[in-house]
Image (cartoon, rainbow, N blue to C red; front, side, top):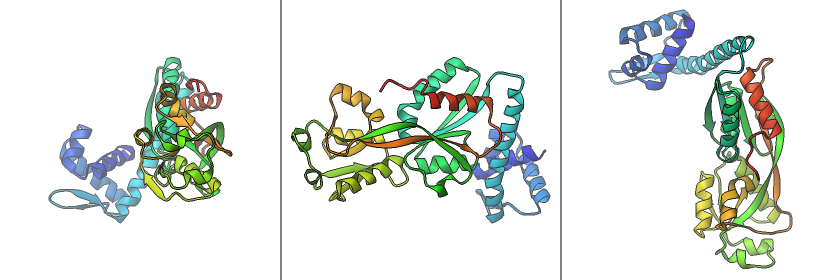
Length: 301
């Protein structure tokens, strides 16, 4: 009963409307209202502020919403673990990845996963490393892949281990003035526009490290929250960037982007596997983690 009440409450909170929640849950509106009232009585607190047009969480509701998500995730995980005792890997698997791994490597890994374990049903979240760490710590992801250096304070609630190195290169269009120089120095690059990712991105962390190593902060900085959009901007001649070689395979093969050769580059960073701190993992989680650690399904670099 409590599990159903929490699911109804979460749906109402996210839809901010009893009618829409009832439609999604295939229930009547009075039944939805009854579940909410039962939950409020059980917890001894009013959880929603109601108006004629919508409902919204109050302070107590925000606390319950946050923990209800974790409770239902744990309940699902418990069921999957029990099922794993008697069956092969199956069921839902929530995966999160930062943009570089998530957009350029993970699709290939998932293809291999589905070939080997067709009963596993993955759900994918692609976001910057900070968001993936947070979702994993809150147990909203079974497994996450992040990039860059992990600080101790970021590891609260998660276990982490690095599994691969990633090389980051200064990248330019073949038409960019820097591409035509035989010998390039840091001073040659200081006045050019640099195109970078947003704060919180593992790629942005490395881009800032590159500026530190080059000994300057760019005179002109353009922030774009998408690796693909950054590549398009560089190809169009808007400026320079620092990107993972994984993201550049097709452009380098086509000759639309070039890697600049400069002392101290490429920079190297780590890809890390993160999982909620727990004694137990589902079989699907364990199998995917093993595949990623072994590089199984990775595209050829």
